[in-house]
Image (cartoon, rainbow, N blue to C red; front, side, top):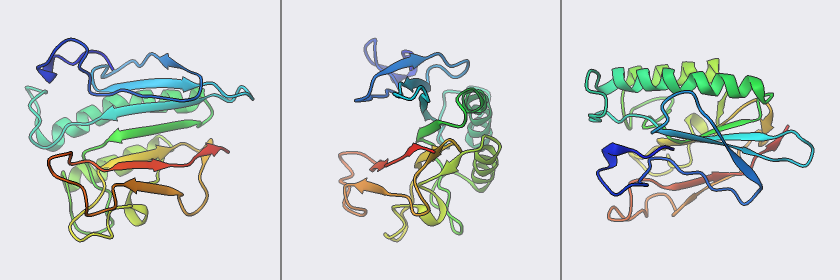
Length: 193
């Protein structure tokens, strides 16, 4: 993503970075350039795959002076999803949107952000033709009481991973050292459909 002045650090500090071991090139997004980045991964069959990395506002985020809480979350979600819709259509649904969504997608109960934000996120993913591999029944962290994923991997219709997502979490749920991070590493194996 672009330099983020709110990171209060040296030039080059960003909210989002994407790394690929496959040949890739950056793609220009139209919105929220400090909180999102995108690449196009070149495929031998010319069916390129787009990966968008992003961060959405948390409940106490002060970056949007006029908005806070769920209103800020929903405003940024609407802004970023315009790029998701465009890229999904342009690349035949071969789109992966991943990052810190700041929102659980539990079927019942509550872990983080708000009920209204959860409803907005589910509706937006549906509108964009994205399937969340790490939410609801497929949340990799719910084996531990009072824990759920807010970092998600969502794929478009042009990508697949089977009926049972082959994902993993690091470190093992419930063992993350609080002084290391408050985010688990989550990965999934996907391929073009």
